[in-house]
Image (cartoon, rainbow, N blue to C red; front, side, top):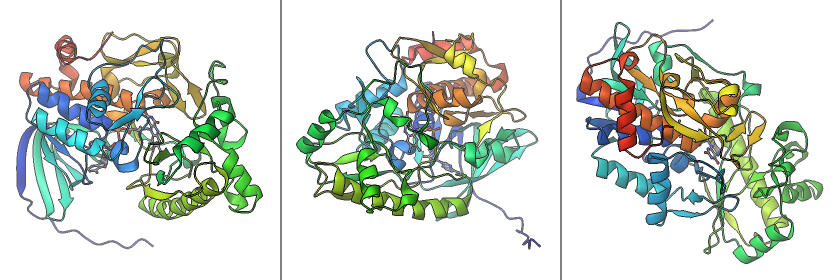
Amino acid sequence: MTRFVHEPARQIDVIRETDVLVVGSGPGGLAAALASARAGAETILLERFGCFGGNITQVGVEGFAWYRHPATIDSEGIGREFEERAKAMGAAMPEPQSISHSLDAEAFKVVADTLVEEAGVIPMLHRLFVAPIMEGDTIIGVIVESKAGREAILAKRVIDASGDADIAHRCGAPTHKHPVDEMMSVSVMFSMCGVNKTRFIDAVKADPQTYGDWAVGGEWDVTTDGKEDEMFSPFLRKPFKAALEAGLIPPSLATIAGTWGTVSDQGDLTYLNMVHLSLDGTDPDALTHGEMAGRKQAMHAVEALKGFMPGCENAKLRNFGMTLGIRDTRKIDAVFNLTADDVRGEARFDDSIGIFPEFIDGYGYLILPTTGRYFHVPYRTMLPKGVKNLIVTGRTIGGDKVSHAAVRNMMCCAVAGQGAGVAAALAVKTGRGFADLDLAAVQRELLRQGARIN
Ligand SMILES: Cc1cc2nc3c(=O)[nH]c(=O)nc-3n(C[C@H](O)[C@H](O)[C@H](O)COP(=O)(O)OP(=O)(O)OC[C@H]3O[C@@H](n4cnc5c(N)ncnc54)[C@H](O)[C@@H]3O)c2cc1C
């Protein structure tokens, strides 16, 4: 039988009031806050951890545009600015499989701080959103928890960029999660140092791996267009297979394999995406187990690389991501839900807030945008049902599995984020609800901010 306690009602200090409150600072939330502030709204960016950047800086997801090839027609706007600014600030490295740059997860923390300060966004780190403040079906603010206890922040418009649709869910808006065995996997990300770059790169060149090598049965089965299969991928399975055969890692860890990001002249091998777990990223007990079991697996992966990957003989673990890498949890059931046909069929929408190439990675699909195909990201995918003054952005916008395998990518999260930020600022300025906005005005402001919407 479940036991209960009663939490007594209490009075909570309102510590701030603002125009636009963005909860969560991943590529979606960071872009949203910058866009909102640049559109003239007083904007708070609220984040539970000690740095902005979400999966980029907290997990170590550095491959911001690894899909980009010469013929790719790419998004523009704040996402591109992340990459360009990172390059200018020494926080990016050429990415090995594309014509893009990989972000440096650590140095990008400073890039994000700089962008936030320059735009005049009010930074609020170390505060966890715990509950919405509602007036009927309208959100008017949030309650946060921190070392300072419980505090209230009031806002004219709220942007849910939590990656898990935490705010929409707590407001009672319809959201859904796939069963755990259908969710995209969860990863403990790690990096190594002390790698001999020349030996490592020589070994990669001597035995180049392809996207086709991802698909050898089990959870790595991948559906492609065929054009991807022979293309180079910075993928490693052979060292782990050798370590299994040598008994260095246990047979239960046959799942260890995956991609590396960059190797620096100083010997840092980063963005090691090798450990794949199956769990629900909104369940703290599952997260606890996943963090600990995933770290153990990562240490086996380090040993396997030291033993069987040239250049890694004298390397060691440099760091784990600050937290598990979660790809897939709640999505909103939006006013309009994007479909596989939309992202595969170059959909065009009147309410486009940006474009994203036909890049699909997840749920067993890998389609690379090598041919210039792209789709419009519609505004309505960010509108939750049943809650006023709330807009949702980043990887939790409305859509089916294949469309999520596209929109979850960080550049697309930034596209959606910029759209949500501009929409929230204009909603405050005009006193309108998200459902009644003048979308032509939103699109004009997005164009002024450098986004591409057609
Ligand atoms: C291991 C891994 C590898 C990946 N590889 C790639 C890749 O190569 N390329 C690519 O484009 N994408 C990749 N992705 C996907 C991509 O990282 C995410 O889909 C993307 O970061 C989602 O952006 P977001 O802004 O929606 O959310 P997130 O980046 O998840 O950011 C959400 C933010 O909200 C904060 N937050 C959450 N809840 C609260 C709360 N209650 N209160 C306050 N703050 C809160 C979090 O701390 C975080 O900062 C990968 C993901 C993982 C996990």
